[in-house]
Structures are given as structure tokens and as C-alpha cells.
Image 1 (cartoon, chains in turn red, yellow):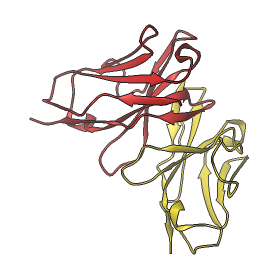
Image 2 (image 1 turned 90 degrees about the horizontal axis):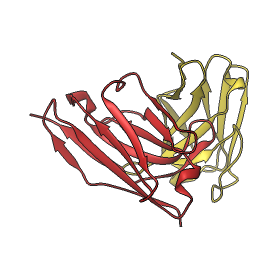
Image 3 (image 1 turned 60 degrees about the vertical axis):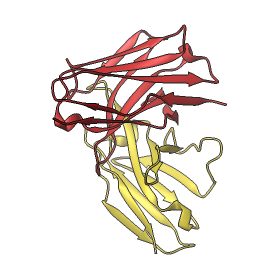
Image 4 (image 1 turned 45 degrees about the vertical axis):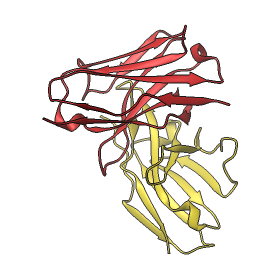
Length: 118
Length: 108
């Protein structure tokens, strides 16, 4: 069974960094991209970026460009997203998903809540 | 940047048909997905490649895409279809994914 299991909730102060993990099960991890999507409270879905171990490709949304790094560890089938210089508007639920925006994201993690507050 | 436009809300009676539109410049030339999200849950892909249903998605869900409008149609609507629905594409010009703002479907 294909599953993506994300790390637990985080509370951070403005300016801090956070590293989220997304451990995958049940498929060949290196054959698919991992896409990250976030959702601020009461708001819609926001594409945040993607990482393809197969293609060696990474793209980030402009809102997080320069502050984010998305990586994959094929030895543990885990994807990571690090976001630095946290701001209050980074408060959101962060989802990882198997797949990409061309072919679709067919399995999603349960989401990680990140709260940025002083 | 590329913009997708969705109506904020659609209301439909049980057993009737819900139609959700997603407008974008020449969206007919892009591959569209639709995602269903119920409160407190992660999104679920209900349509990809404009009109294909992933395994496990009921036949009541169908999609089309032409010109400047993509459409998600839910036939014989059930109470369990009440959710937010988002269209999504890849924008080749910006190399970014783009979501519509979402449409809340209310079953009367």
C-alpha cells in the first residue's frame, strides 16, 4: 500500500528554520517526484515546490524561493523540506504528495502543521 | 504568472449534477487535474489528464478541457461529495504548479 507519512506539528518563532520530513512506503521512491503543497488557515491550496530524484530537478514557488530547500534521501525513501527565515505568513499545513503537476499527485501525506508565532 | 479562476461556490441538490468550471488562458493546451478536499483531510485527486479518473474514483466524476475552460462534472450528487474542489495545472512558462482558488460544493 502506497503511503506518505509526515513528521509532527511544529511551533517556531519568526526567523527560525523548520525541517519537515515525508517518509514514503509501497512504491519505488526514486521513480516519482515529490511535490509539496501548503494551506494557510482557511485558505486554498498553494503549490510550494517539487523535487524529482529521477530527473535531478527541483523547482520552488516564488514566495519561498531563496528560503526553501527540498531534498530526497533514496536510502530511506524520505523527502525533506527545509524552510528558513520563517514568517507569520508561513503558518500553514504542509502536505507532501507523490507525483507532480504534469501527471498528478495521486497519494498525499496527512499534513504537518507549522505555526510561526512569537 | 498563470491564473486559474474558479467560482467560489456551487450548490446542488442530491441526485442532480454539479458543474465546476476552471478558467485559464489556453488551458485547453494544458493537462488539468482536479482535487477534492474535505474538512480536516488531505486532498484527493479525482481527475487527471483532463478527464481520467484514478483508481477508486466513482464514474460519477468526469472532466473535460477545451479552449479557456476546464470542467469538472459530478453526476448524481451525493451528500458525501460535499467538499472543496481545486483545479491544478503545470505552467510551462514559469515552471510552477498553479492551483485555482477552489470551489466549495454544497449539497442542499
